[in-house]
Image 1 (cartoon, rainbow, N blue to C red):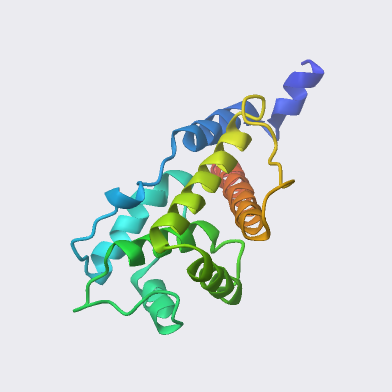
Image 2: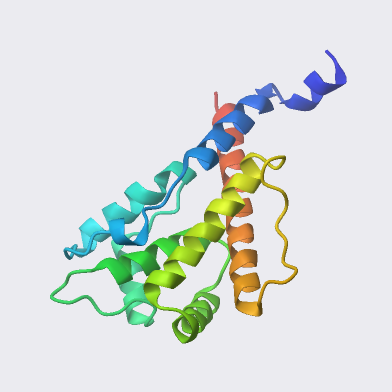
Amino acid sequence: MTGKETEQKTSGIDMSVLGEEAIKAMKDFRLPDYLAIPNVGLYLKQTSDYIHDCVSPLGDLSLTPAMISNYVREGLIDTPVNKKYYRDQLAYLLFISMIKGVASMKEICFLKELQEKTYSVEEGYRHFNEEMTNALHHIADPLHYPAFELTGKGTRTGLLHTVMAAAVYKIYMDKFLGFYGREENR
C-alpha cells in the first residue's frame, strides 16, 4: 500500500468514501430562499418537521417541538399566532438549527439582537444563507472557493461569517464522526 492509500484507510475505513459523501452533501445543500419559506402558518409539529426536512441532508440539526417551545419561552422566537409559526419564525429556526451546535443560547440571543438592530428578518436571513452556502462550498471545494477573507468586512458581517464557518466545520466533523461510527459498527 502506498503512503496515500495508507493515509486514506484508517482502521479499515476508506476515508475517501467519507470525503465524497460529506462533500456531495455540502455541495448539494440549499436552504430555501426567504420567500420560499412557508408563510401559511404551521403548527408546532409541522414546524419541527419542516425544519428537519430542510436541514437533514447535513446531519442531525433538527429541532424538536420541545426545543422550539424553549426558544419561544427564551424570547428567541416570537410567540406563535393561534399556535402557528410563520415565515420569520421559521427563518430564525433555520438559523438556530444551523448554529446550535457551536453557539450557546445566550450567544444566539445576542446574535438575534444584533441582527434586529441592523437588518430586517428577510435581509438577515439572506446574509446568513449566503454566508452558510459560502462556508459549505469552501469546505467542499477549497480550490474553487478560497478561504474566507475577513479583511474589509464590518464587525457584524465578520461575526456572522465566523459563526457560519464554525457551524459548517462542526457539521463536517459530525458527518465524519458519524461515518466513522457507522463503519466501526459493521
